[in-house]
Image 1 (spheres, rainbow, N blue to C red):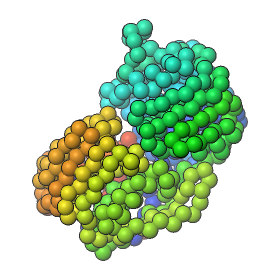
Image 2: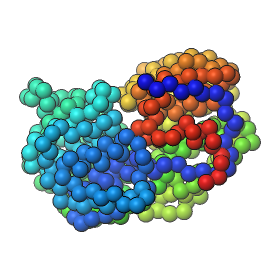
Image 3: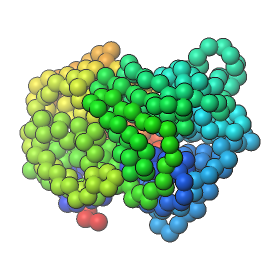
Length: 432
């Protein structure tokens, strides 16, 4: 474990950029791998999650060529077989979307494995509906022992039949896996969610020629080929969020993030910042296939808010930061409908409660969220990233507000999505 010392930081200011959106980067690579032709994907972020997808695709026979800068050239027409287990690292997106891709396409059995954290995350939510379409997915160690829920899993390609799915919990990863399987199934496939989840996959499928129907919370797809699509990945709003949170909590300070993704299914955090009292300006500057532009946030006095299931899917990755901001806000902040936080890279409810309590915050866990009583004075403490990049970044922001020095154990986990994050946070506001 890597430990890093963290102290109070000056509020961020100026205009900065952040790494590319890994959610979009994963999909640009995976969808082009099953498309006809070749495409160039640029703006890919560094980090172990994207490296896992690149490595998995290469192992499955996809031709990927590194180009100058942060670009790659990717060609369809993979073998869709591998002589050894495919490592997905810590990336749930890699594992779950590959299950959907391989279920109708694997030419030989393929085993997916993950690191210790990913191997504890639930997979039954995607295995069960894929099996209902005819997929052959088994526990690698004990095939035929029921519906498996953990990696490693072995996928054997089979003919699938399209069907209608109703998900009990909104999940962009599960929805995407089922749509990608549906592209190679017999007949139409549809997915209905209780609330709308992020729609990066649907946008990209539409631009690549797929027949996609979107009606409210239901998304349908017809089988058919995809055409390769060049993609320039915008900046990651989730990577921008720690800097925006830091600025929002500091009265009178103004920060801009440029060339960042502004997909409406991802901008819930900006709405929360506004509801808490920060001034938020959004300037859209492009929309192909994803909206992008500049965000400007000005810090003002914050107030507590109540967030429920209707907004949680659009702010799920930023909820640990909401808890941090709540320690700076007047009144009570209540988050409910976020049980999904308990099955992320860590139990994020437990991890953020433990970390903020160590700093002196008054925060209580709920089964599906948390309650924060603010404002509270934070003091430096020993902190644990809980093997989770989002927790590591959120606690680093909390430490920036605290009096005295903190020490964060497990700082290396932040490299999953944002190598160099701590240096950037310390120097935020320097124009680039």
